[in-house]
Amino acid sequence: MQKSWYKEMAVYQVWPRSFCDGDGDGIGDLKGVLSKLDYIKSLGVDAIWFSPLYKSPQKDYGYDIADYRSIQPEYGTMEDFKKVLDGAHERGLRVIMDLVVNHTSDQHEWFKKGIEDPTSKYHSYYHWYKGKGKRRPNNWMSTFAGPAWEYNEKNDEYYLHLFAVEQPDLNMDNPEVREEVKDIMKFWLDMGVDGFREDVITFISKKEGLPSSPYWFPVATGIENYMHGPHLDEYLLEFKNDVLSKYDCMTVGEAPMMTTKKALKHITEGPDQHLNMMFHFEHMAADCLFYSWFKTKFKLKNLKKVFSRWQKDLYGKAWNALYLENHDQPRVINRYGSPEYRVESAKMLAVTYICQSGTPFIYQGQEIGMLNYPFESIDQYTDVSTINNYNVAKKIMGEEKALNLANYASRDNARSVVQWNTEKNAGFTTADEPWFVVNPNYKEINVEAAEKDPDSILNFYRALLKFRKENEIVIYGDYKEHYKSSKTLYVYERNYEGKRMLVINVFGDKPVKFKAPKGFDLSKGKLVLANYKDADIQDNGFTTKPYETRVYLFD
Ligand code: GLC
Image (tube, rainbow, N blue to C red; front, side, top):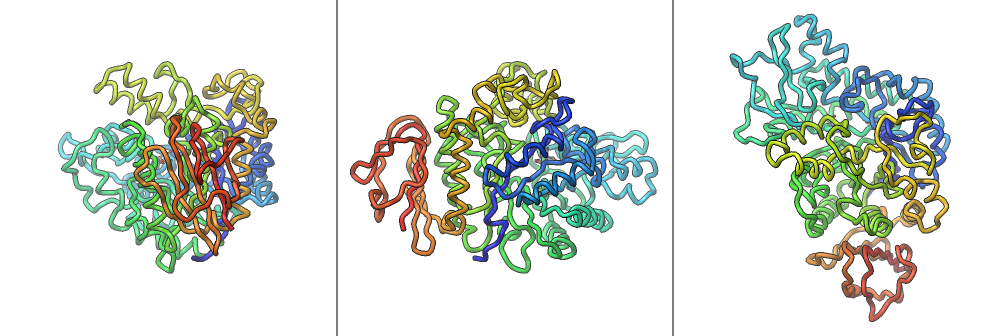
């Protein structure tokens, strides 16, 4: 397998609105980011992925872009961005931008011009269709709930929006739209950014004629017509050949409903490769069906199966993108760990995914073990998809249950402000009111407290990332799972150039007897990471402690 910088790096994701407010208006911004570059560097990561910083009406917090070449004024100016870019590069941190080209904002010039003058070229930048009488052009439903079509009275037409009403889908079949996308890529790459996280990139090609779906779901009806559309390969290859291959950059594509088989078409290394990596969602469904709003009981076996499938199917052929949190997922401790054993389970979960083969992504606040926010009313939420999903859920299960579900499933849980210290508003802003909620647990859970505690989650992440950086086995080693049928233990080994590594993770608080798999003598291994001080060995094994993790290295 070829070595590469993007395989060896670890990435920190910044969701700018809630990261750090540098100008005292209650909203996170680039000045705030600048002030925290040393902190980010101190984690031992090699890159920052910025969720959208571009000019946007913020209906979907930046994923609705009104101008791809300017910075959202609330976040600062292009000068501020360049300072952050330079500051990051000076520290050896690469910068990855979010490329959102499945759709724009309805406030983008292209969209506005296409409505003003339906004969202009911009009209065909989007999917405009006449209705069937009074009916919508097809039965597709938005991913955010509600129909995927919005009527425009002026021209008596509907436009397609797979996400919010204010996010019209671009018509990627139009070659001029693809030229625009390539120009946007060049604009940022020429400025010096190091790559893109490509938002719902596997949705960009829609099946010809946009046929209605024979299936009905409350959300995303019709998804089979665009989740892996007919021209996706072609368009991705065009972007790569015409632009990306000319720069030393990386790409990671967001890919809902992605399987390893399909992913390999895009990320298998070689001349036909489209993207470097993909964010699939399969491992984020161990406590739900497809996504967190269809909640089920957490099942470790489901999680392990997915992890192992991606590790095995890609090994030697393609590269994994590893994550447990981002701005769209509730906090992982609340899902796969335990708030009661917050510190232990946070460390165990970190080991679980970062010791696999792939590029790990860490979401802001994850490194200090931030938890879901205790929302009490639907009025406290600001995320469009939460509110839409709640309204659907309310009709099915009533208000109380729908609210409980939102508390578990909402991505607003990831968007409470980062907790920096014990000062007012957790040190996020000096304004009286931050734009969004501050978790009341900030007096206990914050960066400053974690810095002072050698056993904090934060310092554990640092040790883990340092270990990964210093040991190629973590990056390039192969993978083999043990005790597949265990409902509590997730155990795997890695092998590389004569070295072996054994990773033992305990999901749960009930003690179980662990015995080292055949061929491993724990007394001969070096315990390199653990979340309990007392890591005794008995009979080549041990009785597990709640959410315990241990990593042994064998030379
Ligand atoms: C992606 C983003 C999400 C956004 C959606 C529409 O899933 O991660 O935040 O709402 O695309 O752009």
